[in-house]
Image 1: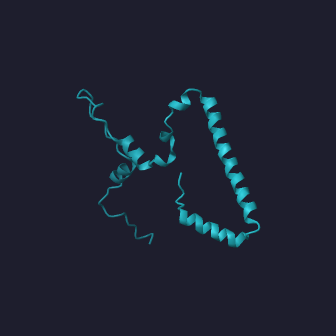
Image 2: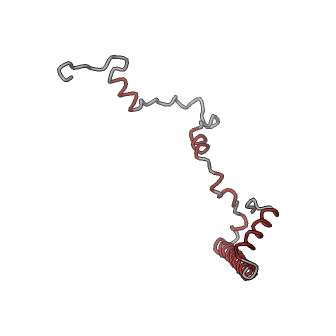
Image 3: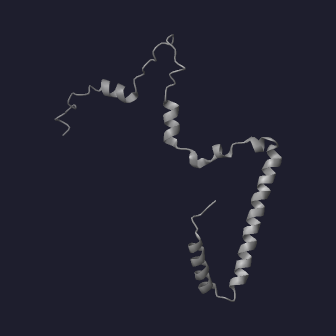
Length: 123
């Protein structure tokens, strides 16, 4: 996993850390950072081992990229859900019944295209 850190950026961070922390405390802080990274790596591998123990042989067969939340695009999911499958429709199936929406019903009943009712006594 890359965080966009290049050698130049790491060198710049090191120089800034040298000035901010000072040459006396820098070795202690770098050792502490190394321990923290090692602990995080151990925690991640421990979690992976626990998942492997919990799931058993299914762990190796699981497609983890399929569970990545970054791949989900709500627009694509809705588009695919609404897309009609032409292979599933046969000629024996009747045409779908079109149901009038509430907006269309209100528009039809209100007499769209006619002027709004006007009461001169109320104005």
